[in-house]
Length: 311
Ligand code: NCD
Image (cartoon, rainbow, N blue to C red):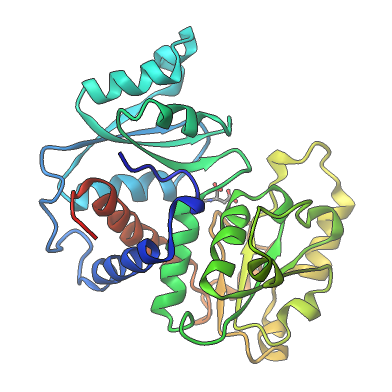
């Protein structure tokens, strides 16, 4: 049984495979009309989200359906987990009910691995607390590949609330592995306290700074992250104001840093906080493209986990 719990579950060969399949799906005229539209016929995937989600939840649903599979949604509040059923038993019951995989988003970071331990069905982490969000990161990697930036010497700036972002945590594991130099930029309080365990070569690819100038100078891509207010113990208004004043991306930055070719954000965007609304329709804004990449990549991932193909 293959699980997708962390970026650490993907070696370089698998990532390359996912990128090539994801690219095929992305380039299909219509994601729903693809050569693998029957791949999951007769199969079911369970979706369990106990934290809010629009794009991750719906893009997994679209990905399953585009491959011909069915979706079962679990209402967390009505599931037997609230009566204390163990994660192992929950996974076994879902498998018995005909589910081949479970996509789970949960505020309790340990739940995806506890479900996977039973090895009854493939478990896909769709965001566990502040720990990881591997499918968002791999979808973003597809977006970089399709834009032609993965093959060049890429310098990418991650700007925003990295300290509370699971997307950032997955990117810290993923981007250095792909040879990308990352500058992480935020007010000191939102810089990551620690980085995941990386090889010393990978660690050298990540620099931290509080200076937006330093992060954007020479960067090709700026990936902004949402200010995660719901994860802040105190809603420090002056910190939010400082972020808007010193870090918000505005049109003037696109002129000041001509190397900047693409603006990304995993969404949802707080327009006017992370990014000025005037950039919403900029040709450099790849935020909606990231959504389509997310569907294509999740189709590739489901094919990898459930398609039964040899690499
Ligand atoms: C992210 C998440 O939920 O971690 N969104 C997403 O899945 N695309 C980012 C966020 O909430 O800020």
